[in-house]
Image (cartoon, rainbow, N blue to C red; front, side, top):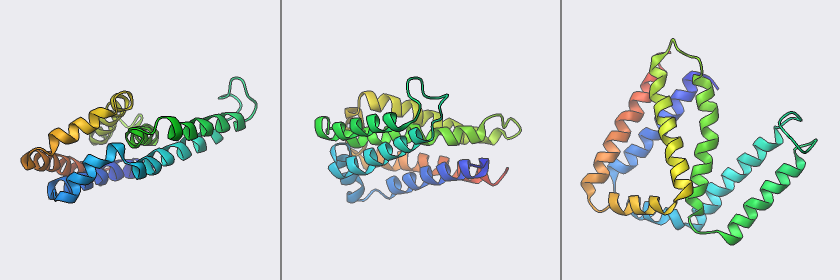
Length: 181
């Protein structure tokens, strides 16, 4: 992935998230509050994260695998774990799926910015990715905190609009920085 694309895509994503929060109609609040325990969200986000991770496992070579010659047993093992997660731990699976997606998406983004010291504006994207990584690790361990955050955020419309304005501004600045490379 090029540095241009690795900066533009997260910038547009953050700007879109900020615009949705800035708009803040009743559908935004109800969807956000329902997301942590959403069954559809679990299937979408955790399912996509599981498929992406299993695909990444299929790309492993023999030097990455300690006990196996092929990635087949690893892929089957993680596939079984993903199915068991749906059966035995369905609570907050959508939040954990978002965390998995963030962890997997960070690698190509950070790899594109690696050793690009001549472009200091890349730090806008890198900072957002590292904040997302920290948040993903925290929420994977305590996914109910996202529910608590949404409850706090949507108590006052001014909070939602302020967070939306900050995210929209940061996302537009990051997307604009992509055109300076």
